[in-house]
Image (cartoon, rainbow, N blue to C red; front, side, top):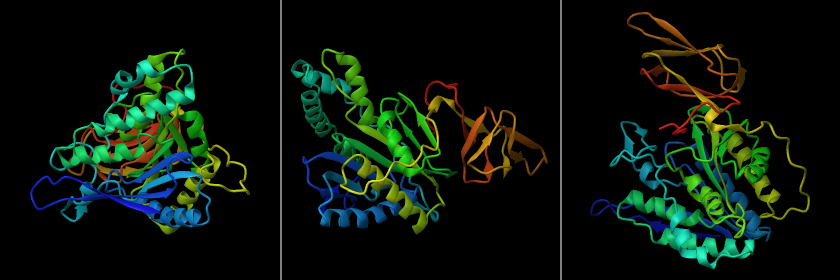
Length: 373
């Protein structure tokens, strides 16, 4: 294992943060897989999964069972970890700018087209090699003036040429679910089976330029721009894995999730295993992210949920009561569609307009920005 420390530029003199990446296996000897934990630094489950993966990957490397390179970023947001305020982390948004740490990643499509369009031909494998080199060069050319710029650049640099990218997050309170693109789903189905995902949400563009889409969607966009004369496969499968809820932090869960990720690496051939078993059954069919319907608070008040995440609901079924403690008014928010009630906020007091939970429906009903703020 090789440990690399990436020093981020200081926002003010005398201060700095560092990002650590752990590299297992041998670069350029096979597939490259990047796994990063807790880009939203107040989402702890991913960091505990990374802790368990460190031990597993080190053992696999010692046994000579890694065929390729695996990059593990055990805590992907040192800037957010530094934002300890009023007895809690504020790891979702950068304090200086208010920007979400998982938004605003560079779309490198045009830069790559300009660099290699004339060099690409009918050989798909050769095209992938040329595009990966162009992607590395495009990331290297990105600005890194602020710590946030630098963090985005470093993380993108570690993943932009990977065959698969796993971005470990969590929701407030939820069942295990994932987000990926339609182009990535044929590969991501294996991931969903291995980790036991209860919901798989697909979108071509979710809005806001999150990290996983910056890694994977560039391939689909390039393929569309180049056309069939210059074939380019979906050479990167990227997915955001939501490891249940913020409070689901235990060795038992983390060890099971780490095993699911190792199973995925085995299924892709990155980890050698002569006793590879059949894939677990798929627990869900993919559904459109545009069909994930939010439950919205009609007014402020206390929240009393009537059901737990993971239950199937039908349109109009009561899910949560919003109770105004001053007026005594109680409004019941019901399921907007048939589907799985898969996530809810961890808070129990709401402001008007706040998203209280989500139901995964089968039909696309929303447009525009599909992710939460």
